[in-house]
Length: 420
Image: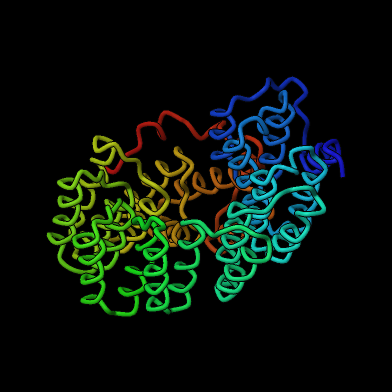
C-alpha cells in the first residue's frame, strides 16, 4: 500500500475535505487532536499533518503522538478494520526501515488491543528491512500490556533478545516487572530487580513502583512500606511523583490529614505534586463528607500549577450529585466541556437525572447539545435513549452533528462557569 492510499482512506472516511486548510504546526496538531473525539476528524487532522512537507516523519515524537491519538479515536468507535488499513499503509513508506518508526506501528496496534497485528508486524521486521533491538522489543512488550496479555511478556523477554542478538534494557525490565505485578506475582518481580542490580542496570522509580502497587493491592501495606524503605532509604532510588501517587492511592480512604501530610512530604522532598496527587486529596475529603475542603483543593489547582483532568471532574460531579447539588454539578460539567475533559456517560447520566428531577430540563438539553457536538454519531445512542427516558424534546439545533467542535461551546456562560 502506498502513502497516497492512506490519504485516499482519509478522504473516504471524512465527511468533508478542507482544501483551504493551512499546514499545521506540531503544537496545533496536538491541540486539535485533544479536542476531537471524532475519528474521521482525527484522520483528517493526521492527513493534513503528514501532508505538510513530511513534517510528522521529521519529528518522530510528534508523529507518534498524532498516530496514536488517531488510533485511539478509531478504537473507541470499534473501527478495527480502519485501524488496520490506516497502520498497514505506513509499511510502504521509506521510514519503515527505521526501527523507531516501525515500533510506533507495533505500539499503536497494542493501544487498539490488536495484538496479533502487533506481533505480525514484529515478525515482518526482517522483510521490511528494519533492525531489531530493545526498541522494538519494548514496543511488542507494551502491546502485550495494552492487550492484557501479561503472561506472554516473560516468554518474549527471554526468547527474542537471544534469537536476534541484543540485550534487554531497563525499559524492557520495567515492562517485565509490570507484567509480573499484573499477574499478581510481586515476588517474581522483585527477583528481576535483583537481576537488574547484578547486571548493573539502572533501577528507578518507574521500575519499582508497580511492585509497590501490587503489594498494596494484595493488602500487604506493611510489606509495601518496608519495600519503599529498602528502595528509597537504603538503596537510594529516587522516588518520583508516580511512586508517591501509588502510596496516596492506598490511603485515600482514610484520614485526610494523612493524605495532606503525604503531599507535603512530596513537596519537601522536592517533588511537585501533580493533578493525580490532588485528586486523591479531593477524593479523601469527599469520602469524609468534607465538600467545602474538596472544593477548595479544586479551586486552588491552577495556582499550584495543575489543571483538572477527567478524573477530577468525574469525582466532583458524582459526589455533588450524591449530595443533591445538581446545579453545581452542571457547572462543573460546563468546565469539563470547556477543557475537553468530559466525564463518562454513567456519571453524566446521574447528573442529568438529578437535574430533570429538580426541574432543570434546560440544563440537561444544554448538556446533550454539547455532547452531540463533541462525539461522533455512533457514540451517541445512549444519550438519545436517555433523552427519551427523561421525556426531553430535543430540537433540531440541539441535534447538531459532529464537526462543529468549538461553535457554541465556548459561550460566555461556559467561560465564567466555576464551582461557586
